[in-house]
Length: 309
Image (cartoon, rainbow, N blue to C red; front, side, top):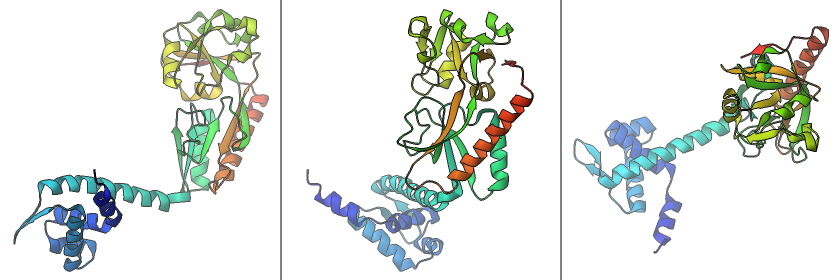
């Protein structure tokens, strides 16, 4: 198959050719297309002829009163709309640039601090739109280029990233609401080996390293937060999770109770070393402030662990 013709055609194709074709169809005439695009009618005709020459097909049926796409033109029109839409999105995203901050997370954003983080951000930086987005990846979408910063709680090698420890969260046990443990105020770490533990080994925070090797619980592995919650709701297993999960995932049939005798979970923000978002340090500072305020409040007046969901 000779690909030289296709290569040369694609090399000569320009967005203005496609815009002219779409405008002609949408407005119904060359004259109106020229008015919409702000160019001359002659320029509209030249761009359409150039497109037909590049593609080697006739795209329009023209009469003195009407303009309609040929069968080939219908196919080209559909692809043209997709290409133009993609180009417009690219321009919009690039122009938005630093006016939008995406913070990714695998399970929870900032837990009980999420709403206050959003409120304070909107008040202090109204010119930078904040978006909190869940991505089911170990880096909360950062490695995939889906966000500017990511909230990380799961064990992760932080060396490839710039990072900051913003706070710690207590661990909770998640269980079915009709579980006998749901009537208690707290669960001890050494009680869990008697139960089956739901673990998300891709993005979860819990590992069997919490227990000695000869005292580890049986495990049921899950795929993400929704799968994890569904497995626990059946009553066949329980889960261990940071306080943020209990705050952000209040579900019927699920109850959370504090886990005693377990180290808290560190919460990090991570970001790319090269070309960080200009608002990165503002986001880190705000998160640290919120976790610090909560820490002082808990020390002054501990909150009982009642989180029936």
